[in-house]
Amino acid sequence: MILQQLVNALSLGSMYALIAIGYTMVYGVLRLINFAHGDIMMVGAFLAFTSYSITDSFSLAVLVAIIGASITGMLTYKIAYKPLLDKNAPKISLLITAIGVSFFLENLFNMLYGGVPKAFVYPKFLDNIIHIGDAITPLSSILITIFTFIVLGIVLYFLDKTKYGIAIKALAFDINTVKLMGINTDFLIMLVFIVGSTLASLGGIFYAISYPSIDPLMGVLVGLKAFAAAVLGGIGSVAGAAIGGFILGFSEIFIVAFFPDIAGYKDAIAFIFLIFILLFRPTGIMGIDFERSRF
Picture 1 (cartoon, rainbow, N blue to C red):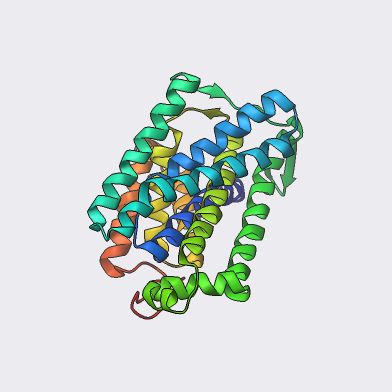
Picture 2: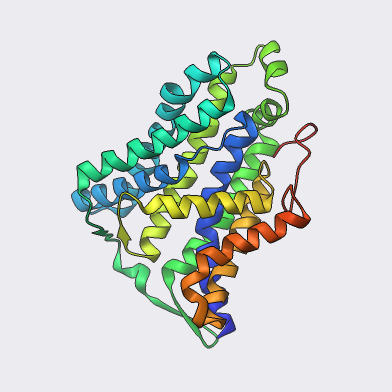
């Protein structure tokens, strides 16, 4: 039973981790909690759903979802956030704008697709059963976990070893100094939104495969949990966000498995667990001194 729940927890934690990384990267650069991030996950899931229905090619559907979510993220920055940043608006104005963008996306897709949940269709081979000892799990759960670790490695390599990644880390450390050095900070911030939106769209697709039903409000609770995972791991740390996502996934799965009588409160318990951790380590598990280091 423990092995079975371990596989389930890895799959769920992977989804939270992918979405949480986008939260932590945007916050590291702009000090902004992008509450529209969970809805960008929803956009990715719906674009994949629509594309697969039309083309019957799941790989093309994933590509369309990534491109569409990335464009949505870029437009969110250019239209909603950048004008306020250029005017040095208070952070509360950016926060309210993020909430407004979230409501806009939810209502837009509610109007386009209706308020009724849609059954998410995906290739049937992903439902093939894999035996791991006495545990059984669909192939999709294994692939989601493996893919998440690969993506996490790519993101960490990008930030640590590439020119643009190092520039983003410098931007997170001191945006004004980076501007004085003649670096195009606007492009770097858009790149952060592209990376975050790409990961969110993949997380949305994985979530829709695991729980094959999508609706315009699917990103609200998942987004809040991913944000909690980013805070738990240490917001501003990519590795911390991933760790926080896995911790949240493990706690949620094992609460349901070993304490079924309180399974209905699993979401509340997850946030109580977050509060408990932050009482002892306010900066999160991989907490960062934001005056010295980011990411």
